[in-house]
Image (cartoon, rainbow, N blue to C red; front, side, top):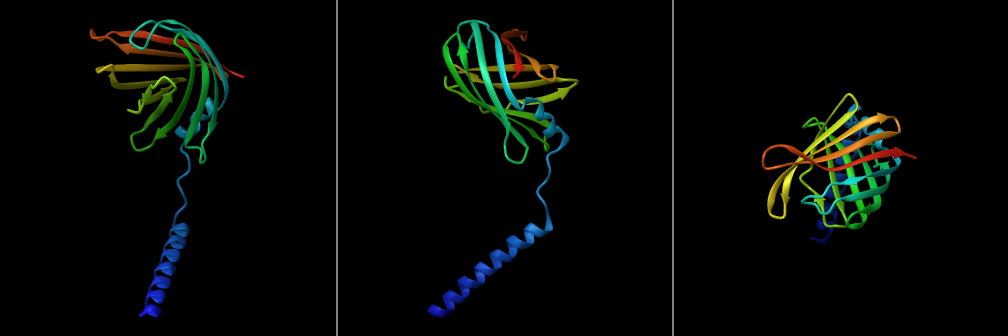
Length: 182
């Protein structure tokens, strides 16, 4: 009986190895699409200077950041580590930019040291050098909608603008910055 178990276990292992080998031979992983490659614009070291408007996210004032953005393995996503200052103090954040070919939208996930998390995965589009992301979520128990517009000014700079939609449906500015590649 003991010999039968070893024989069965060896058969299962051989089957698994064959299945993995066959899978590796039948298909290659998908290659990044041109939309994924468009994210190369964000790869590099960036600095930003701008202004946060007073509102539901806190007091207004100047903001700065230094961002280091690099490709994640496979070239499907760009990972950005940021450090800076805001009107509420020092800031550290992590952001992930990617493209979802199933939905044909750009995505963003972010979190920072203030407890902010954009986990609803804002959906974005790209047209003529402008990235537009729309998001909705809850802040302080109240629903909100936000919009981020990133306008490429040159291969080494972009303007960033974040708006939130008020109860009247109008977009109100929350933050603006000028970002330059080092």
